[in-house]
Every structure is written in structure tokens, then in C-alpha cells.
Image (tube, rainbow, N blue to C red; front, side, top):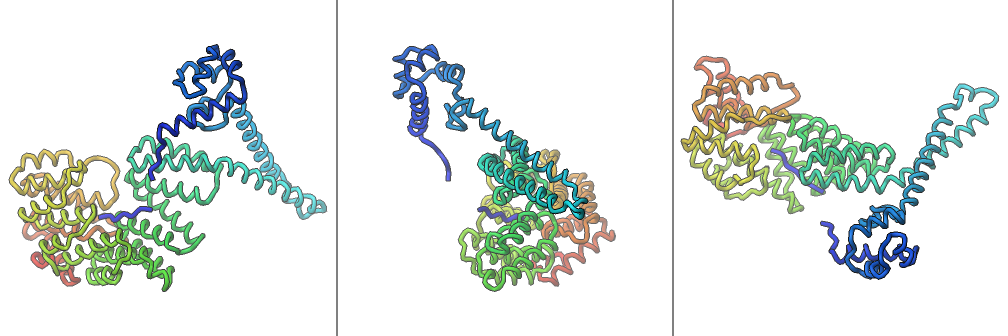
Length: 492
């Protein structure tokens, strides 16, 4: 389960667009008379006057303005860039000249005989080196200023494409932004770029790359303003991604370190309380329910209403795992959000009680055509006796594609459970895949508690009576019952 947090719409009316376009035509009328515009474009003068006063203008006239008067089409239609193509070329030439000066300044530094600084001409060489570096800094600042607005617009478009899940467009915008980023080292824009890259990697299911960029963002905060509220938000996002990739120990260490760095005053920030609740949730997933519940409770009250729902969901999950509340009481506590809905569905699936799972589907399953929702519908079919439909779904589950380690294990376990509920022989093959993932897991990583519980439930249903696996499953439930997971009592 992943808990996400985030940081106006823009529109122009047609009347405003028309007004801006009219202003651009009036600019042209100030440079050339209407008679001259008519002569050069081959248009009747009365028509030119009509266009200038708001009449509907044909495309042919706009094309003639571009061809005959050298008007920049981007400026004419959208107000972007210089009015005339000659101005665009001059601007490009100036930029090219400045780039050439930048290269020459860098060459001057590179060609300086640094070894001769110890000789008799060292003062002159130092002055030349200083002058070259000064020119370099001045030109770099100038180019940085010129490219900043372009970079900012690219980042806006890039983020918009990501929010709309237009990944092909986002790929193109990322490439363009990477090129412009080489010329613009504005720290705020570079930070925005890395946040975009992190989100893009997350959407592409490349959790490792997402973690890399989130780590850089957090390091920027430490090197800059330190642990302020924005820095704590970066810490939350990074810890959240780490735990979703089975790196629970690292996530816990980050939560505790960030909280310690925030100090006594920082511990009262809403984001710090949310980070404390997240650390409790991670402890519950890792295998210490009592410590997890203690941290979730200690993080209350949460003054931010938007985050209060997240913490409430974590509390419900902890109480369910502890056996302190039953399924019906958990429903009555009214958790909110997609993460809560998915958590409740997974818990109901683990119970394998048809009536409870049917209620869970009625309350929490949406019509969205996600892989998770399609799987839950197949489980409902299996529990209600419609095994043919469930088996048909199982043929294409799990779907191909890059997935974080946690999700690979979840899908192997879920596939095993569904095959088992359908009485399909392939249940053992899928179970072997889950076993291999669990056996190959690095010691510093840990899969979620319910995924492991479901795996060992599969063991008890599939393994031969005297197989060593069965003792491992019994030990898992017995050990975790002692650690406070009262919901496992029936298997211990």
C-alpha cells in the first residue's frame, strides 16, 4: 500500500484571444501603412482595413504577412517570440555569439599554463586566469537568464503530461528538458526537473530510478534550507517510495533521522506527524505491531485534514492486524482514500470468507479497469463459484511489464491464491515463483506483512503434510502472534 501526498487551471477566453491578436495587427499597422500592407500582400486596401478592425481574417492574408512582410508566424498566431523573423534571427545570432564567447572563455582557462604559475610570470597568468573565469561567469549568467523561461515552460508542460499519464509525450519533453538543463543551472528549476524525473520514473514503474531522484531532492534540501517543512515533505516521499520497494529498514532510518533533524519545534509540524505515522505503518509491515501502533497513535492528532485520513487508515489497519477490532468494526470506522480501500480489499481477500469479501467489494471496489480491480473481481467470481471466469482472467495475470519487487511478490502470491480457490493445478507453479522471490530476498528488504501471511496460508493449503514448508508457515504465524498480530491466532 502506498500513501501519496502532493504539493489553477489556466484558460483564456475567446474574447481575450481576439483582443491580443488585434493588438498584434495594430503593431504591424504602426510599422507599415494600410496601403503598404495591401500592396505588399496583394490584398485590397478595404479588406486590410476590415481585418485591422476585427473582421474575420482569412488564412491566405496571414500567410502573405509571413511571406511578404517577414512576420514571425509564432508571434502572429500565438504572441510567442519576436514580431519579425529578422528579429528572431538577430536574437539567435546574439545567443550564438554569446555561446561562442563562452567557449572562448573556457578555452582561455583550459589553455592557461597552470604549471607556469610558479614562475616569474605567475602574476600575469593569475590575472589572465581570473579575467577568463570572470568572463565565463558573466556569460554563463547571461545564458542562464535567457534559457530560464524556456526551461520553466518545458517543466510545466512536462509535469502536465505526467499528471495526464501521457507518457509518450512526457518522454519527448524529458529529452528536450535534459538538453536545456545543460544551459540553465538555476537551482529552483533544477529541483523542479528532478521532481518531474522522479514522478516520471514512478509512473514508468522504475522505482530504483525514482528513489535516486528523490534522494537527490532530499539532499538538496539538507544542503540548502535544511530540514524545514518542505524538506520533511521530501523525506516523506522518499521514505514512502522506499517502503513500497521492500526497503523497509532504509525507510525507517530515514523517518527517524529526518524527525531528529527537525528538532523539538519541527516535531509539531503536520508533515512530521505524518512522517511519524508512516514510520509506525512501516514497523507494522516489518513485523513489530506494538511499536507500529505506538507510533501511529503518538502521531495524533493530525492538524492537517487532508493527512488525517491517511493516519486514520493506518490506525484501522493496525487495529485489524492486532485483532483489537473485527472486520465490521473496521468498516464502521470509515477510512477514506484509495490506499485504504485497497488495504481493506486485501485484508478481506486474506480472510477468504465469501460474505465479508462480497461486502468489501460493494464498499471499496470501483469500476476502474486497473489490474488490481480486475484481480479482485476475479477473486469474487471464484468465491461465488464462477470459476470459469476467474480462470480466464488468470491466463493473463500478472500482466507483463516492469514492476517493483514488492509488487512482483504480491502478484505471485495473489495468483497462487486465486488458482488455489479455483482448484487449478497451476497453483503450485505460481507458489514456486513466490517461494523463489522470498528465498532470494536480500536481508535488508522485507515484503509486506499481509502478502507474507497470504503466502504462508498458501503453504498450509498446498504443501504436503510433513513438508518443511509447513513448519516454516506455522513458525511465521506463531512468532507474529507473539509480536502482537492477533489476527493470526487461527493459524498459530
